[in-house]
Length: 291
Image (tube, rainbow, N blue to C red):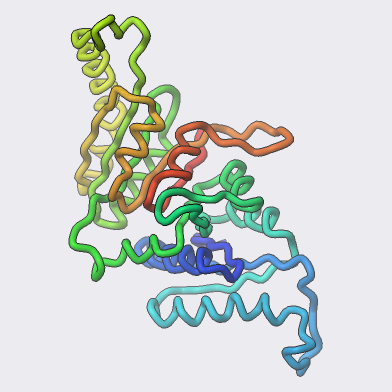
């Protein structure tokens, strides 16, 4: 199967926003855009059935309407329709395993302040084998050059413990495709012994900050050499990783966070950094699984 960017459609404004964002990304990367809508009751209908009797009418309309808008703005983009007779979670997880990335709409609880992960989005983000990007309604407008006076680029959150090649590969490739700078951030809470009765022991804090900064620089070195065209900055913050990520994402075009291996259990779950990013970052959030 040719490389694709898959977007899940359900007819909501959020899924349309996701489709617009996905179309931009597919065009940048020279990939095909797949419009996926899952409808468990999808059935073959005899030709000539009027719309009012076609049980697939609304499913087909969701895909066709989205396709028409995408092609109006991206006439050269390769777009394929994918109507499947399955429940959304299973269809999206299967599609995610075949896609360069999967893009889903995310519903805000409050204006630009948080995301709502519903019954479908959460298990897909937590279990998908490849990157999943969550986009709020309206967020894709911020990505159009004609509506921005400047860009802050791509932000990637690094843990610095364990492998992170998949995470960095996605972040660098995305920044390169967009022609945008990349900022790598790492947050580290101070240990108890760094605190003194009058506040923080600045010598201890400085030592921890320097050690962390050197480790971050070493982690990025090979990737800087591999992507010399990407302008890379890095920084550490002596706060909780979740807080550091949310602060760094302010004004970003895309926030990239990692997600550890999914452990089979009764309910999907995400780590605290991914949870904080998804619920509080204003920009689209890419969740990248890694070992």
